[in-house]
Length: 603
Image (cartoon, rainbow, N blue to C red; front, side, top):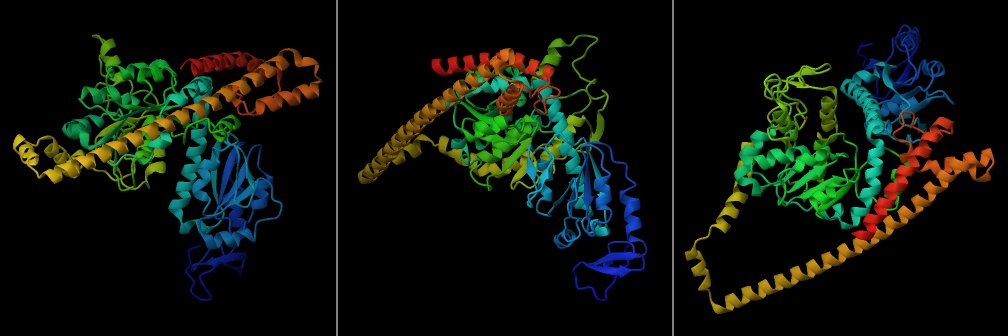
C-alpha cells in the first residue's frame, strides 16, 4: 500500500485498526493492505511451495502475520529466519513474534551482514541465544516478504538473499571439493606441521611492507601490467599467485612473494625456472608437502580454514597451526588477503591484476603460465595451441569485460569474482590494475598511474645508486670531526643491527623449540587415540555394545579428518559400513604420523 499519510504519524511504527483488520503505519505509509491485511499475507507467503532443506528468509515480518502457520507447515530440514534492516521495525516485530514458535529465529539489523558466515558454520546462534541449524542443513534459499517494510531497503534485501544463496551454494561446492581432496588436505596437514618449526612465522611479517604492493594472478591482464612495471619493479612489493610465477619470470620480473595452496604435485611445474630466485613462499598448511623441499626454509605457512571441524579448532586452540585464513576458494583471493595483511598501514596501496576470472575465446591464461605452456607442448596440426574448447564448453557464459570486450566465464570463476567483491570491496586503498575481465567491485587504477605514483621513489633509488665519482670525492673532503661523527653513527647502527639479528635468531630458536614440542605431543596423542580406535573397531576389547558405541563416538568427535571426505561425512555415524570405512582410513593417518615424527627428528 503506497498511500501517503501525514496525520498522526510521529515517525515510529504503530498499529492501526483498518476496515479489514490491523495494519501498521510507518514513515507515512501502510505496511499492510487496509482492506484485508492477513489475507494478503497468506496469498503472498503461504502460497509459496517450500521444498525440504529450505531456508526461508522472512523479510520484514513486522506483525508476524501467518508466521506460525508457515513454521508449522515446514517440511524436513527447513528453517525460517526473520530479517529486518530497519531498527525501529525490528524492535516492533519482537513484540509480535508468537511464543514458542518452532524452527524460527529473528536476526537483528547488526547480525544480517554475518548471515553468510552463519550458514557455513558448524554452530551459530543469534545474539538472543537462539541456535541456528548447522552448515549443510540447507540446499536452497527462499525469500518471503511479510510486509511492505522491505520497500524501505529493497537493495539490502536483494543483496541479503543473494548472499545467502551464494553461501549455501559455496558450502556445497566446498563439500564436493572435500569429497575429492579432503583426505589429501588432512594428510598434507599431518606432514606439514612437522616443518612449521623451520618456517618463518607469518605473524612476524604482518604490517612489514611500506612499498606499494601488486598482486599478480595468472589472467591475461597481468601481461600488460607486468610489462609496464618491469623497469621499475623495485618500487613495488610483488606478490604472485602460484600460477603467475612463470609468466612473471618470463617478463623478467622476480616477485617478492609467491602464494600457494595446491595440495597436489601438479604445482611442481609452476616453479620451473625458479632455481636461484629469491622470494618468500606463503604456503597453505594443507599444500603439497614437497613444496618445502622446492623452496627451502624461507617458507611461511598459513592455515586455510578448509572446513569447520572440532579437529581444526583444537589445533588452533593448542597453537599448533599458523594464522588461519578464511576459505576464499581461489589462490588469487588468498594472495590479496595476504597482501593486505603485509602492508604497514592502510595508507599503503595494494593493486591487483590478472584476477580476471574470465578469458577470451582461445586464451585461458597469460602467456608463460603452465596451462599455456602445456598447451603449446601438446599442440599439433589438428589440435592447435589456442584453447577454444574452454570458452564454448557447456555452462560457460558470455560477459562484457571491463574494456567492453566479450569474455567467457564459468560458474566457478564467476563465484570467485562474487566472493572477491563481497570480501574486499570495502578495503581501503585496494585498486584493480587489470584492464580486462570481470569487474571486481573496487576502484580501477591503470599501470600508468602506478608508475607515476612510484616515480619519486624510483627516482630516488636511481639517484642514490648513480652518484658520480666527483660527488664521492667531495664527500671524502669533509671535515675530520664530521667523518668521525659519521663513523660513530655507522658503528652504532652496526651494533644495533647485530643486537637485532641476535635477538631475532634467539626468538626464532625459541619459536622452533616450542613448535617442535607442541607438534611432538600432538603426534603422540593422536597416534595413541588412533590405535585405540583401531583396536576397538577390530576387536571391541570385550566391551558391551553400549560402551563400545560411546567410546567410538568420543574418539571420532574431534577426528573428523577420518571421514570428512566421505560422501556421507557431514557427521559421524555408527552404521557398520561407515565404521568399516573409518577403520580403513586409520592406517593412512598412523603412517602420516610416523612420517611427520621422522621429519621432526631428522630436521
